[in-house]
Length: 588
Image (cartoon, rainbow, N blue to C red):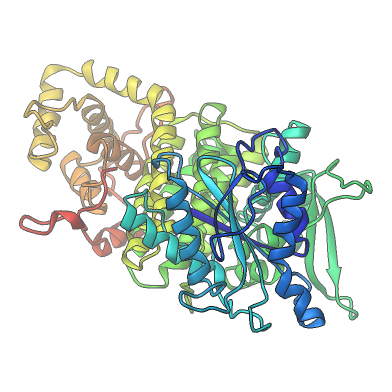
C-alpha cells in the first residue's frame, strides 16, 4: 500500500479532476467512500430528486473550504492536503467500507483529523478506481489553527505498513528517506505522449550516474556529461565558485519552449554537487592503478585485462562487506563498478547489466556514513573498465565478463546481508534483485566459453580426467553431488585444472586456494564459480579459444601476495550444522 502526498491551493480544481473522466477516461464511477462527518455531499452519487453534479460539487467545495475562509489571512497559502493511496497489483480489491477505514486511519495518523478530536480538519476520500483512493483535506482546524503535521509522509507510510500487516496485504519495505525522487504523473504522461521509453528524470539520473562512474576529477565528470549529449548549466555564487549544476535532455522543453532543467539533487540525494565533490575528494581515483588495469599479458585485450583486475578487487570488496559501517563506501564503489560494466559490456549482456546497475543504485544509499573509507581501488577498477572500453569500443571475449559478473553476484549478495543486518529493507531488496539480474547476465555471457570448456573436459584422456575428478571430489565432497545424490558434471572444472597444471601450477593446491577465497553456499553452481576463480588465479585465458601454449619453465606460484592475503582474511559465512537455518545466506 503506497501513499503519495502533495500540497495545493485549489480545492475545487482538485475535486473537478477527481470526479472528472481522467486524462484517459480512466476514472470510473467516482464517488465518496468517507468524509470528516460521514455526511458530505457526493457529486458522484447524489440521490436528491433533481441532482446536479456541478451544484453538488460546489457544495462539497464550500463545505471543505469553510474553515479556510473563516481563517482568512491565517490560512496557509497551500491549504489543500492531497494523499493518494494505492494497493499492490497482487492485493485483493478492498471494499468502499475498507477504504473508508484506510482514509480515517491515515488522517488520524498524520494529524489531519486525530481520532476523537472534534476540531480536526475537514476531509473527503474519493474512489474512482478499484485499486486506490484520493484523500483531500483542508489544513485549517475547527479552532482555526493549523494542524500539527510534522513528518506526515513518514507517519502515513508507517500506518500503511500496519494496515498491510493487519489485513494480510502485501507488505512493502519501509522507506528511510534516502530514495531518489520518483517521476511525477505529468512527467510519465509526457514521456508516453512524446514516445520516450521513460521520463526525462529517470534518463538523466542514469546518465549522471554513469558519467560519475570512475571519474577522477570534477572536470572529467562534467566533460563526460556533455559527451553523453546532455545540456549542462552551472550555478555560481557571487564569488564565481560553482554551487551546483543542472542538466537537461536535448529537445525536452516546456510550454514556453525553454529547456526543462533538473538539479542533480532532484535526481538523487547523492548526485548533488557537494555529495559528488565529497566522493571525488575523499576517494580520488588512482589513475596510475586504473591504467595498470589495462596492462598485463599482451595476448589479452585491454577490456579483458581490465575486467580481470576488477574481479580481484571485487573479491576483496566482498570481504570488506562482512565488516562494519565502513563497508557503506564499498557499496557505493560497487555501484560505480556495475555502471562501468554496463556501459562497456557486449550487446548480449548489456541490457541485463544495465537493469542490474539501475536496481543496485537504490542499495548504494543509506543513512550509514563511513568516517574513513578508502574506495580508490574499486573506483580505479571502474575507471579502468571505462577507459579500456572507450579505447577499443564495446565488446570483449565474453569470458572475462562472465568471470567478473560471477563475482559481482557474490558481492551484491554480501551487500544484501550487510543491509539486512542494519534493517535497510529497501536496500537489501534492491541488492537481491540486482543479483537476480546479474545471474541472468552471467548465463548469457558464460554460455559460449563454458560450453567450450566442457567440450575440452570431455576430450581429456581418461586417465587425466579421472585424476582431476578425484581431486575435485576430495576437495568438494558435498558440492560434487546434486540434490538427488547423483554426481555433478565437472567437465569444465577438470579442463581448467588440466590447463592450470600444464601452465606449471599444482592443481590440488590451486583448487584449495580457490575454495578458501570465499564461502560457496551462495553459489548457484559451485563448479562455475571455481572455474572462474581458478582461471583468474592461474592467469588462464577466460575464453578457451584464446588459450596459448604454456611456456616451459618451473612450477609457478598459485597466486599473488594480495590474493593470499585476501584468502586469510576472508571469513566463511556458510551456516554451520546446528545453526539457525534462517540465518543462511540466500542461494546464489
